[in-house]
Length: 181
Image (cartoon, rainbow, N blue to C red; front, top):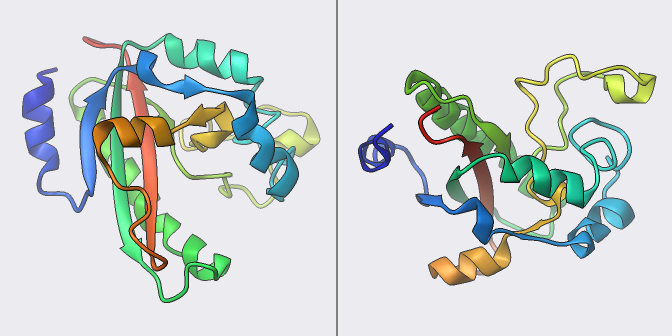
């Protein structure tokens, strides 16, 4: 796949940012899981969340299997960013964009491993709670933080503002793949 040509195809999409990054540049840290473990109601309830996704070390090893990563980001405005329901209501549009980019990669012969914003809500009751494998692993995208990835240093390195003010939500997805695969 010609990465420059592919980025050109993405220019027509409403993305705030899109570019290929070196997966080795990502910072993995156990402390990122703190929010998952202490504040997220989905912790321990889906295959897309810890501990179902594995340890941070296991997640780092999984991501290290890939030599290429496409980072995409969208932004959206909300009336009140402290209103979690309003903020989370903007997430499906980002997930649709992530799926659209993944489909474009698929047309290039690339099957990406996707990390996005989801705790996964595909099934009414996740098979994780029943001790069974995920029913739709090809549709489920664990969130970036579930893997212990601290995305902020990368955003800073790229010169990308993450917080624009109190009414703008920034969503990020990482699409890992093997170059030439």
